Length: 79
Image (cartoon, rainbow, N blue to C red; front, side, top):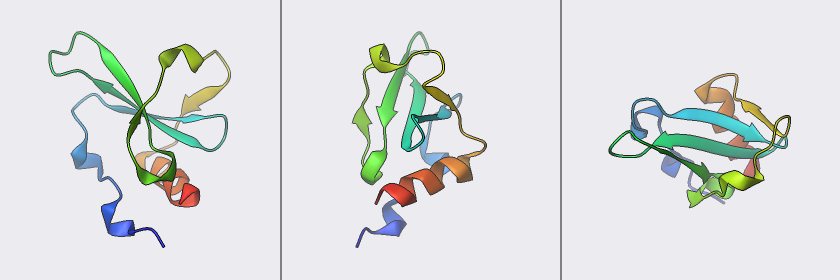
């Protein structure tokens, strides 16, 4: 069983981070880089943060999460 205490908290993310759902069940975070000049996408499926290639994102295959809690629930369901 996964450690639910290890799930991210909204405060773990840099200001300006956004949360998306890719194809119904993959939680993605869009995070600004330290210099704020670019963004990186991360896949949180299974509760672990991994780089996600932006080339896979197309119009209509992802959408903003309704809220951070909604995004977190998608992670829980992937455990």
